[in-house]
Image (tube, rainbow, N blue to C red; front, side, top):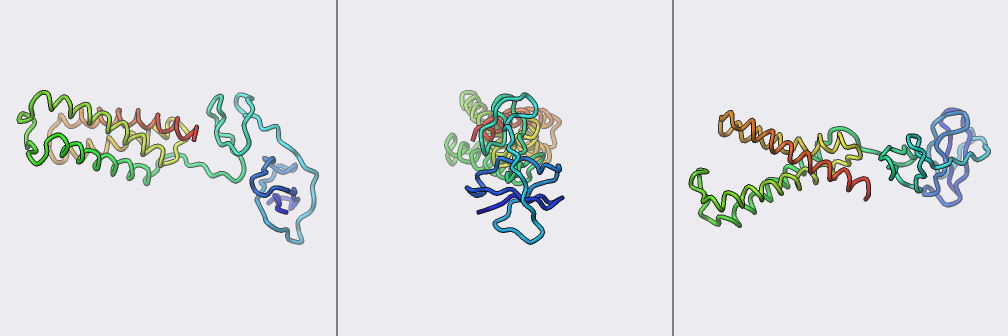
Length: 206
């Protein structure tokens, strides 16, 4: 037998199936409930108060153990589930690492050991192909950053994904010293941000 114990008044609610059987949002006194495997002497029994498992924003039914409302995307704030919001340094770092790795693989796959040092030395056809690859890689990197960062809100997904492209743009600006690098920053930031939105959609579903 396991329990949900109110941190405010000490009342408890029995859970026959363990932590996965959460069906309570708050204690009847309004206090926060915490999961316990056993009870202390201060806990007192309370009559079960079963929630309707409905989204507080749109009223749609929310499946058990689900963080996000499938109808409107609102956070359900269920007990026992931690949600990552805002900037995720780990997500951005993983996304940027993915960007660097896949870019290096693409460069060696396209040019082999004869890597051009200047853009004008690259054949036009190869330049187009590399541009397409860079676009896809940027979007995927933003997706990875958002998903790994646990973004469940679109603004968080765009932030975590977009920062991958921004970091790349800053590095390009520092190495080239060209004002055109600002355009690179904006372009890659936007592309990876779009990938971040896709990552958020995937995070909500899986």
